[in-house]
Amino acid sequence: MPSLTAWHCPPCHKTYQFHVAGEGADARLNCLLYQRSCDVALGLPFNLWSAALLTRMIAQQVGMEAGELVWMGGDVHLYLNHAQLIEEQLVRQPQGHPRLEIVRQPETIFDYRIEDFVVHDYAPLPPISAPVAV
Image (cartoon, rainbow, N blue to C red; front, side):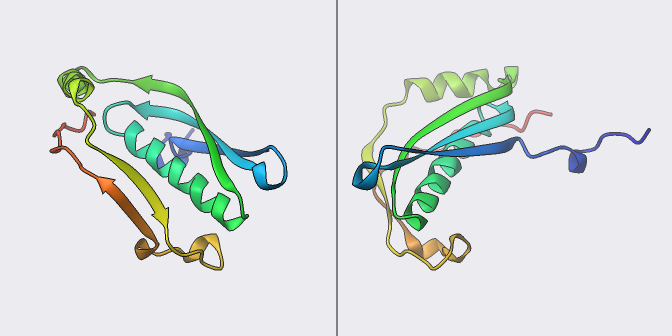
């Protein structure tokens, strides 16, 4: 039997399910993301951000507003060498009131460009470095 290697596994953020809630002008596109494996310190923030962005993009393409993002995790883990990173992150106070604007609606979901996204009032805090846990 061949060994299981990384390229035989599905991606960690593997299942997206979209649902329309409401009707007409009040309709919202909700997204449920199931993530089969999740590194809380390094992967989860980016996975949540990218799922929210994807939901906004698809909602724009179908003429709706984005609704809720629901996240479910399977093998959710926090490595011991990341504990201090998480503790530092939890005491930080967010700065600004960031808001994403998608300034152009391309013909298809595949035609977005980086210039189509503008973030207003974002005041990032300094990065917190963390080793990749293997």
